[in-house]
Length: 245
Image 1 (spheres, rainbow, N blue to C red):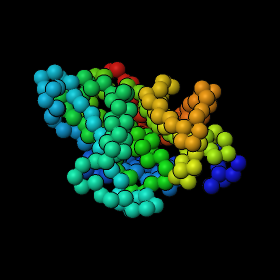
Image 2 (cartoon, one colour):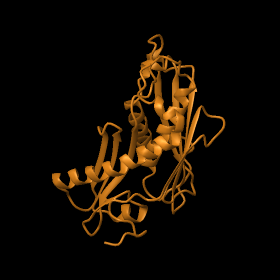
Image 3 (cartoon, rainbow, N blue to C red):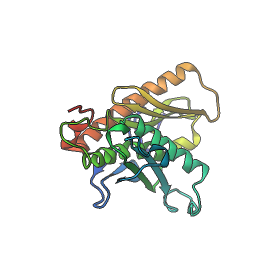
Image 4 (cartoon, rainbow, N blue to C red):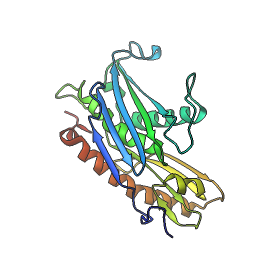
């Protein structure tokens, strides 16, 4: 099979991951995966939702948006409330990052992750999770007290895998591949290799348990490479993740 950009079936698109992309948030990162480009920022506020007041525990949530000009066809601005797709992606990002964050270690604070897509060519939600993690670690460093437990327990990243229209298992689908795939799978995985979330749909055909296992193995290859890139981007902060003193 020949992919649109001539990649091998188990090959990621070219990836750029940069921290400290913005100067005002407590943490920020910029990611390019192929032609998909996302900015993520983490902001820490000294407040929590009402249900957490007085508990000593913090909260983490995510907001996701896409510029009207980001996709191939202009997307209307969501001025009043997020669409169903946007709300679902926001919840996914929040769940992924909360899974590796000990909220009892940030105090009564809220960390908000803003993920903004400036160009979309498939995989925007997985790119957002991967970059948001870097922004989260950077933000947690601003409230971390030496000798205590760092709030971020493990790495987490995400990638897509799918079954092409010719039946081949492929990693990191671009928009052209995603729009014609027989099955499409988004996988979120920790540095320990544990699954946080698997979203898979048989777009045109059903799939077997063997297909699913092969897609998960393929996604694992990509996620391990992305976590290595997260570590490179974090530089000296990489040692904070999972630190207990």
